[in-house]
Figure: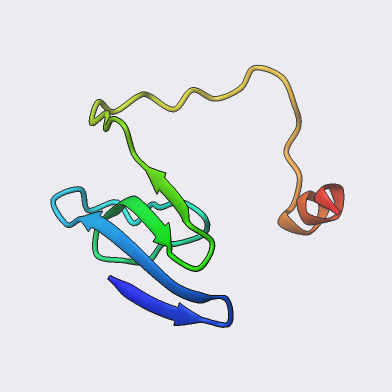
Length: 77
């Protein structure tokens, strides 16, 4: 995929067979996982060196407390 923004052209290579819409440098939303991003104007290159497809369980933390989304956002700022 190729996109042009205020800083120039961005080239992104993605794998449609990895359907998660994940990426790097906030380059996401393509129909697959972004594996490489190149910005020719700055000669910036990011490349995935491996892909792990094993799903890991999500474990509920034993410490902490429930907060609303508003409180969470306030804590982050």
